[in-house]
Image (tube, rainbow, N blue to C red; front, top):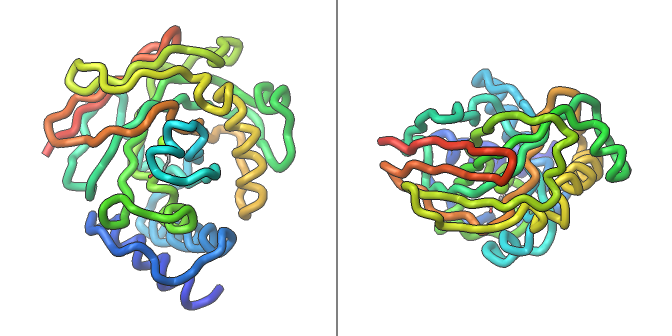
Length: 254
Ligand code: OOG
Ligand code: MG
């Protein structure tokens, strides 16, 4: 591994750990190098006792691509330290400029790797749940290129999972409401995620295999936000309501 990759990984990990923004990368990275930085930066988290519990997909909806000005899917690693209990509270002191977005979560009962069909991906699902994700870019002003954000573990920061449901519940076209302090701030449908959020599992299998990772039984996969993300501030209570699946919520405290 090159020294440059290790140095960028350390810089981004330090920014995440201290909640202090850094400038966008000046080093030109290709996509493989960006995933190498991400993998290397995770080593710092593992050394602090964090453990991967799954992955998140990014930019699987038009709404997200347009909001952030990118047009390719990405993925990042989720650790159990990022998990916020449903109904729980999280301290804003951990974040730089957090945003929150509605997600659909899948729990896998089988590994998924490489080229898999939608039918195979759906057969690997143990359960599906409503979820929320906190994203917090380590880059100043939340501005990044595709490779910058990949290197930064795709802005992964926090997530909350609501009640799990049996996988025969079709999550293909469910209404989604994101609420901030009881006020609806984003409306969408799970169909905005690649036409069906289970397609994110197909993408996840392919993209992780391309970049040196694989999905195991027991992994959580966040399918990607169906709507644009909204700013999260101290005092906010956030709730996502997903038709049929129910709610997930948390509060942001000082
Ligand atoms: C990157 C993460 C994107 C999603 O659901 O599309 C993402 C970002 O927007 O900072 O999590
Ligand atoms: Mg997301």
